[in-house]
Image 1: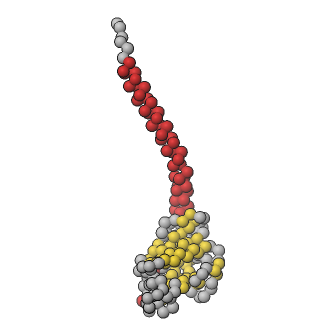
Image 2: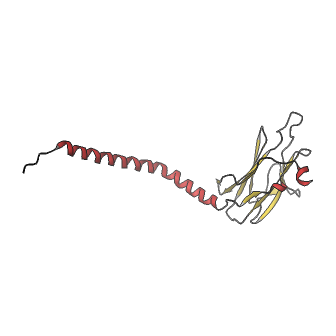
Image 3: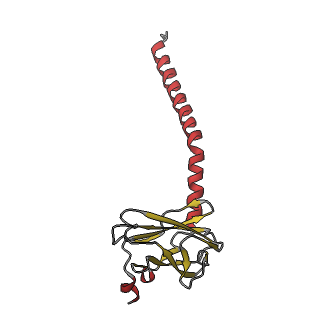
Length: 179
């Protein structure tokens, strides 16, 4: 029995093998490039998971007062020790203000507790606090920031900002909330 050498069959096997090796090498390079990003996102989502559903706005105590230019908002914090900051974003149709409240009492421009205390911090575990933010002129005369309409809370763990935990899309006047 005589076997003929089929060079075309061997070259097809070598070509397929080289394509498989090239694909594996490209996948390794892509993995090495994306690995730090993926690890960072996993770490961040793990820390944010600890505060998910633990930070809420009490819509029954959140309102805007046109006569004083204030926005009152009540933040409730559930059982979590991981929370280090809360970013509060108050928006009108034309502008927005961001307020970063930490777990260490400090003076924050235009923010105080409802009782007038100016050194403010985030609520402790399983508690809540009513804040007053001095928004300013609502702009009924054509000037000012406009009527505040939306308020959002973004919890932070360390330096990682998490997804929006809660928001109110229409801030009622205080006359409606408090009667």
